Image 1 (cartoon, rainbow, N blue to C red):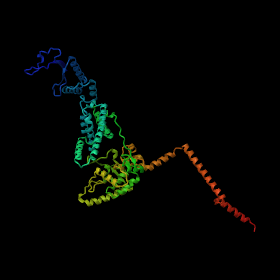
Image 2 (image 1 turned 180 degrees about the horizontal axis):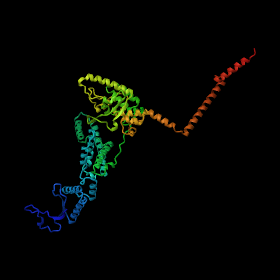
Image 3 (image 1 turned 60 degrees about the horizontal axis):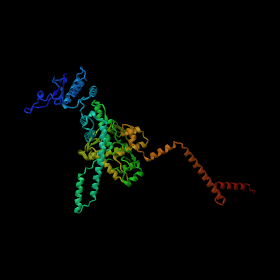
Length: 553
């Protein structure tokens, strides 16, 4: 295909405004004209011509170098490869239209051989939008992805080319997030200090009112209270980007995932702690919880269940406390999957929140779909709950909403998971004397009770719906005091310590010496007219009896 370099003069006739071209009187001047290149490309499917054209070169040498570059790109496709020839021709035509730099030959060769897009002008923001539009997951998951993309990813790296995204760019992004956190904390502290100072200014008096108005105006100018982007959120942002880039690799758009290699602060998940007497006493004094995740002892759990025994949703609290169902699973449990005759229920659905809206959904994970065994007491509780529900259905009559769920509102309609949490918190506050826990902590408590009862870890994991027993060990196992004490004693007895044996021997020797000392003291008391020992008294009586028998008549 033809290609050439040529000189071009851009001077125009002052009267007509047309380019002078070859008639320009300065055309033969050495530095007057610029150089241009033109390279014919393969025609389009309809037969129309297309070419690569570019001008503005200051010298023939640079123009010729770009023309050679274009020809090298055209030579990447074999003569018997019409598809490759078309891809390269389309790429060069777009580069010419957009006036973008010519792509590297070797990079283009790699992309052509791997089936990737040759242009590579797709931005991170464009790809994230395309990726999100193609996701087919539940709405709450989509909303979480959309928030990560809208709030964090697009503003910071959205304008970068997808194929040129590097680990260093992501490190800079997370550094910016940490810096923003520091600024948010400082702004919040300043606003809080100003509000506290405003509270100290009296309402009465002209000067005080003027001062309050000025302070309120200053507070209104301050940034509003904001939440920082915590470690868990940063990890989720990274996970969102990593998933999106993995799909880009799967579609052969890129070959490297920088999100898989960027390092950020790890998330330290809080461990569940038991409300021991010492922790309860400190909480009563300071009002501070030792951990965000706290678990009641069996006695505390029993006290709560006794307190709410007459509550309409008592069966739900009981089921979560003993069998460890999640909140959404309990709210969405149908009677059709609850067999009280065989003492089993099947977790097959749940109610989840999307904002404040509620929707039915499948369990959180594949392992969340599970069969849960029920003990006799729980079965009796559920039977009593079913009887009360039947009574309520008759009372409501045609106004009853038939959802088929085990736990419902008074009229049979769906329970709102958020309202269930609020109700539980109010009941805990009302149960005077009990330290606070979250509704989800009842699930933690169920795991702790099962593990304390020496139930196999696999059975506990299956009951809770975990995909791996490590989750059960790492998150849900909090040691009850009496279980820990028994384990400590059993462990200590397995180790034969020499110093321990010597200590026991010395203790026995000291006890024997003390006993001998006491015996000697009693004998001394008997010799001084005190009460003789029992054994000595018996011997004296026996001797007197024998003497009587030998006495002559």
